[in-house]
Amino acid sequence: MPVNSRISLVVSDVDGTLITKKKELTARTIAAVTRLQKAGIAFALISGRPPVGMRMISEPLGVRTPICGFNGGLATSSDFSQIIAARYLERQIVNAAIGELDRIGLDVWLYTDKTWLVRDRHAPHVTREADTVRMEPKEVAAFPEHVLDAVIKIVGVSDRPDVVKSAHAAIHQNVGHGVVAACSQPYYLDITSKMANKGQAVSVLAEHLGVVNEEIATIGDMPTDVPMFENSGISIAMGNASIEVQRNAHYITEDNDSDGFAIAIDKFVLGMRS
Image (cartoon, rainbow, N blue to C red; front, side, top):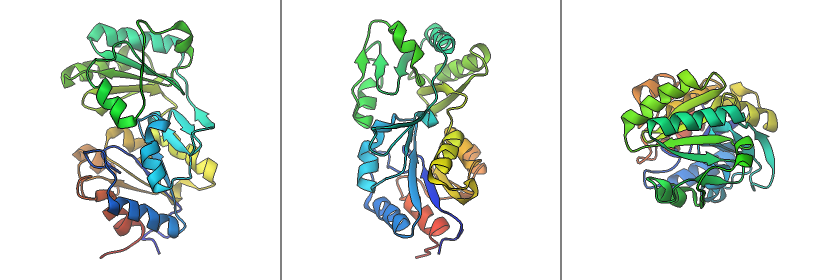
């Protein structure tokens, strides 16, 4: 029996949590998810990645629940063929956010439910991101007008953490209350609808799967994961998470290069102490 016998669903972040720093699934992690599924506990993914950018994770794990990408901005069926929920940004917010990021000096990426657009294919982190999510961006000289009505996520990119922090503050101050801006990495500033956060995504999963939030266990490592901690019965922070994130979780496990995910599943969900 699980430590918390009411747990019916485990929801996991991906980068920094489920996979190693080398972006790999370990055999122990795959085995832990298999044990969950054999115990009748569903398993779901939530990430800042586009849903299709989790295919190389979801398929080896046999995930059959909705895939929640863009920090909750887009939920699709497990085969990516059907949109279950989408939280689009208003055009005026998109324009305002692009203006602020340009002013401060960040590269800007736009994501729709189908496309990733960049203005410079060779800008920092584009190639790395494309390799990570196995999704090729579309390079445009300027963002097309028709795309501005279909944006789910905006990313500001800079190799200077101080610039990313300045942009974070500026978005909150100047763009308005309709967005959530969060640093998913020191070099990424993710901007989504206020309704597109991981806490809301947990509620989408709960409704779709017929599970109450108290029966959900969540696990993650970044500030963007805290809203899902707050919307679940038990929460687990990775050992590589900041102290602030750890303080918002019920339990703390090992880091993502030490099979922290698998250890957490066995210890806090399935109750295996060996």
